Image 1 (spheres, rainbow, N blue to C red):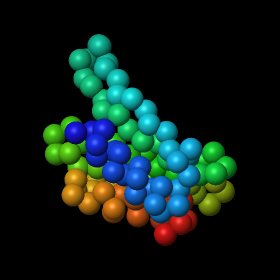
Image 2 (cartoon, helix red, strand yellow):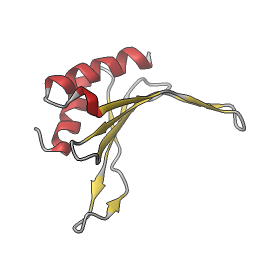
Image 3 (cartoon, helix red, strand yellow):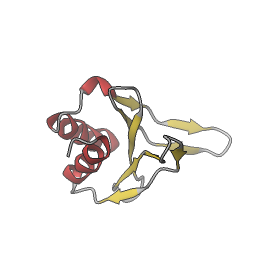
Length: 104
């Protein structure tokens, strides 16, 4: 479920003008100490190398978890905002990321 959902988002991000080379797929990992599995995710970067957002898919609901990066007044790093987007709204994910990068 994760790969097809993230593939839809990649296609929509590219359609919104985000360079495909700035989208990095990070494979899922297994934490052997706790037997927990983290699903694969997408990391989206700006042209200057700043992280724009992280996108993953929730294990049970299949909803998209979008974490737009935030910075403060003097470019200090702030905690990410977390947005949950229903699985049937991948275009909303692309819009959130594009807006955070300044393309929407």
